[in-house]
Structures are given as structure tokens and as C-alpha cells.
Image (cartoon, rainbow, N blue to C red; front, side, top):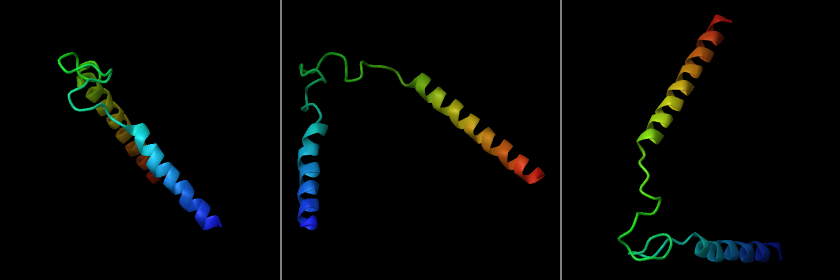
Length: 74
């Protein structure tokens, strides 16, 4: 009985959940209008996002170096 219930739940999550993750049809924007307008996401640039990501990675690396040096001193 438990195996049947697990199978049914798996079926429900796989097949009904996939429909909720759909993308717009090819040739349409996110709001359903035809192509030609702003792209999905509003045409935002990613230059500043990459800079933030690199700064956070550098900070994380420096913290790891600091922690490792501190551990060696003990």
C-alpha cells in the first residue's frame, strides 16, 4: 500500500509540476505579446552584477585565507 502511495505521489509531482514551470512560446515575450519589444528581463545589463559577484568571491577567499592562517598560529 505504501509503495502504491509513493508511486501516485511521484506521478502527481512529476507530471503536474512540470506544467507549472513552462516558458513563453517561441516568438513571444514574457507578457504574451509578440516579439519586437524589450526582451524578457527588461534588457538589464549584467556588468554590475558580475562586479558584485567578483567582489563577494574575493571577500570569501580573503576570509578563508585569514581563517587558515589563524588556525596555523594556534
